[in-house]
Image 1: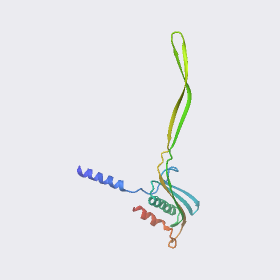
Image 2: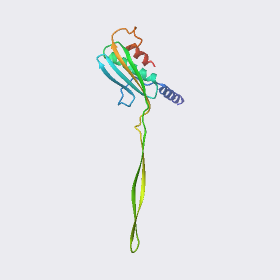
Image 3: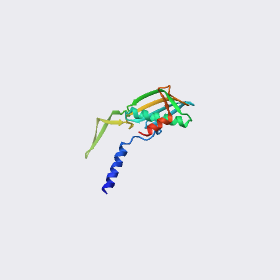
Image 4: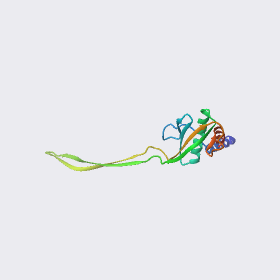
Length: 169
């Protein structure tokens, strides 16, 4: 029993230390994952959004997706012709405070008569709004797909090599 508990704890520790899996598509503009756009048959923009501010991991996942696109389209290499990075601060909370004024009426009746009094009243309303987003890093890569060597370009990559190296991390 003790060995089973130790094995389970070891597996949990290893799982906690494991990095994110391969790139995945974003469900919408505010969730983690990639979004890609074809500019032409061999030119693409890949945006990779990742919660937190880890530039290197977001860049690696964008690079990985660039390599996948390259191989899927029948090319062997790609060159990054433009790269950009931004931090999205996430949700922007808004607070609204409203005060409304009115008149409250009070009617009191005795045995012979009733009296009505009016007095001014005010009531307040406070609303807090947030869309639930957290800060995230967005890395954008514009790539050009090609065949053959990229040895002459400092921003050139062999797609199969990129995937092989990033899968090991």
